Length: 351
Image (tube, rainbow, N blue to C red; front, top):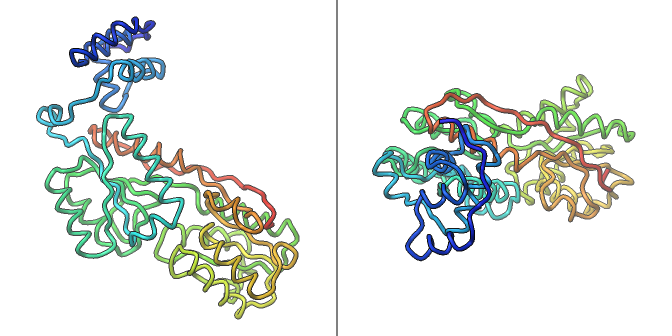
């Protein structure tokens, strides 16, 4: 049935009556001015429903207090109504890294708007990975979002061998199955930053790269090398052990020893850049007078550093939207392709 144009909502009295006796899907359809089928499509992913009708249905749900009965739906659809957000990192990463926290928040809100719940699962150890597989194989989740994967992690291949739809944030681990992924243009963003630092007068640029077994670590380093070509001196590149403030501080200290004459540094994440700025301050190097510093992410901490951080913005909310959209398409039995989203440069006082 084609999607109807939403009519004006009924009176508040109709919504109150629905609340008193327990709102139904028919009540939501009546107040929204659409068919019951349209309401059902909105609740199951909003496929082939106009933005106006989606808004009318959600407003009618708010007015009536209608809540989808997930248990009843699961008996019919054989689906749980839940999605797993699987983080292949220690739990402290989630609380330290604003990018991971922001991604989790956006995905939770987006799935909640589609009548689904999000389940956070850690997969940093073999025991945790086994628990994820038990949940996936047992039908407790309809799909999996894999976040912060490392090359060589066996979880991606193990999940790909099940019937559960999987989408990777960033890119699929090297050497594993070709899973669909959604992420920012890490390599292009790194090129933007490197070109910008050179344009600001840098003659001896260096880089604190991310871990070499992660998508960001590989792609952002590749973008740095794309711009510098043969000028990319090995002594001027140090890889951090993890995406953390401590790792950034340690990597920057090493870089100052191997390349003491650097006058600019591209740091592969804002979190690493916080540590790098601390190391530069401890070494008596002024930013930006002595060293230009650029980060990556434009997370909430970028504007709070001293000085505020010039960085590359990855569109986190859009990444979350695309992750959810691709996963829901797969859950619905449709094909979905990987998506790479553009990045932009954000200029602040550090460069």
